[in-house]
Image (cartoon, rainbow, N blue to C red):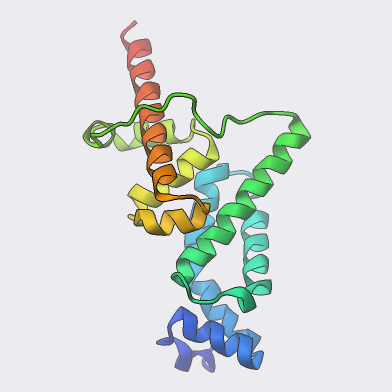
Length: 191
């Protein structure tokens, strides 16, 4: 690791360029260290804490490593990493669903927009986390990227490979679903 210390101040893009150009694969360790916790936490946030979390996270990093040569720097490296992670996790979920013949509602039928985020943020954090875990993985991911990671809509567009209007619509639907779940929870408590 001491040999790698001199590279600590290099940007992600600079490290990728060195790895790809010269084949110094040991530098990938720095990128791994920078992103492992974030990718691991995203994996847990989407699939839940299962026995597969470690394996899925490792597979994501293998995929990142094998595809480094395709990183062109058109977006932030972190966006590229999360895009790979997101797509791998979605593929993982779909493969699990096929195995269990379970279906997931990826798109919501209801399209009305929630203008005011305040009602979501008024929900107690533990309750909000419980509600988020009831959402499908796409909805949970888009809300976490926007509000937990404070990622701009332009970056979310790149991860999901969709247009700005589609990002806003998915955010709106996901927020509305959280609020519906919250209202349902409140109604059951008061009964």
